[in-house]
Length: 184
Image 1 (cartoon, rainbow, N blue to C red):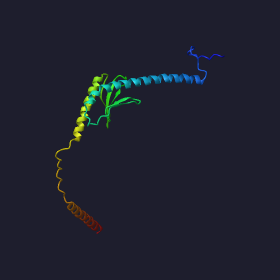
Image 2: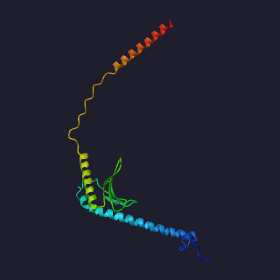
Image 3: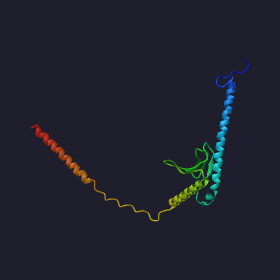
Image 4: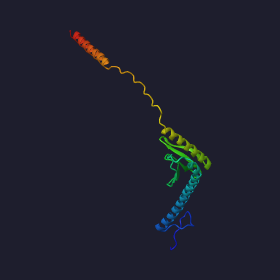
């Protein structure tokens, strides 16, 4: 009985005799899976860095006085290439497709999605141009202030009150007269 027993399903593999051996095998399997995940994340970051380099000529043309854009790669659980505070590029589910998204108050919208770097660069170029125009519109001060519409003339609230008071008094007088006539 010095040899470990084998399980009935697969007689070629020895069944773990001790918990320590089973834990060691489980740790090795987990390390292999973690290595695959790290390799995938590194591949995502590498593809985002390639796209970031392709965007360098675009951001070199943005004037220095415009500080809307803060481009950089964040390396979290999901690596992202940030264009500004609300727009970023991440890899799609297949890890080869770029997905350019914008966060809005109504949720996240996909601005562009492609395997091709040039398509995403064009979409980012359009986005940057729109944001610069929005900024220019926000910075412009209107030359003439809008005139407020004339307020409608205030009507006196005294006459409706007096009329209601008189009607109420007449109604009470009428009820009193009817009550007096019934008691006769």
